[in-house]
Image 1 (cartoon, one colour):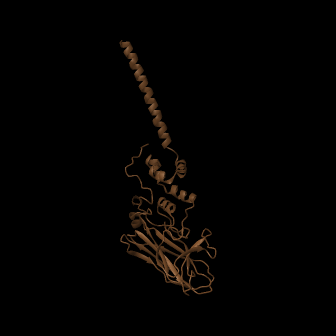
Image 2: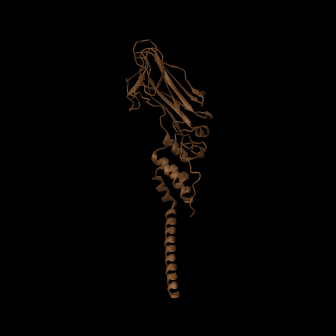
Image 3: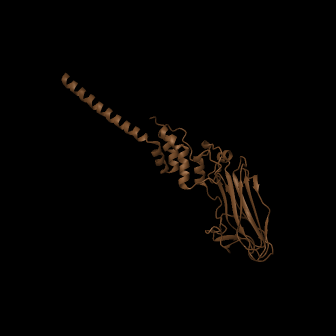
Length: 302
């Protein structure tokens, strides 16, 4: 019995050793998996969805976190996806933030070219024969643009109110980072009738009171003009904290009181939030603009 017990003990000991050996082998393979040369790991991350790199990969281990947070990774991602600096002299202090801002950049105005008639626009003034949507009279610099809004002989104005929180730009981001806000509008007269064009864009606080306003003087066109397209642009900078809404309004009329639609034409309007180099990013407060860094995730130690 004793010999049998010893034999059984030897067998158990042998099995335990085998299990430890298997365990050690598994542990080594995991270590080898995590310990990837940095240049190879960076290339892997460049081929993964960017949100997964931030939310998942950087939690695996210290090495992966180092690569996921590295300037070279996000700078290279910007290069590959065609996100370039508008001003080469202003280098971003955080390329990850710059990348996500570029990726998120879009026109916040809806139906800017009249392709859905007056949908999404609130008409505040509808004088004369009222607003109308028609095909462009002369080709637009942007070949995609085929329609425009046209005014009549009484003042015509329309507007959109952009809710920045609903668009994914939370208060902490707007207050601390204060990204540039660029507006653009295209307008053109009829060649055979005088007209006028006006635009007003306001940055509003939570109570919808103006923080900053862009409202240039009214632009007038004489009769017998070349009816070419003109662009109005403006960039809001350093506007301070509190911006929660953007109100975009434009319009005009003809100046000869002709029945019909001989007034100013407008189309391809845009409001965009985009990165400007040289700002300090407060990444932990951006939430919706940039994927949040997990706060409670534990890193594996190698």
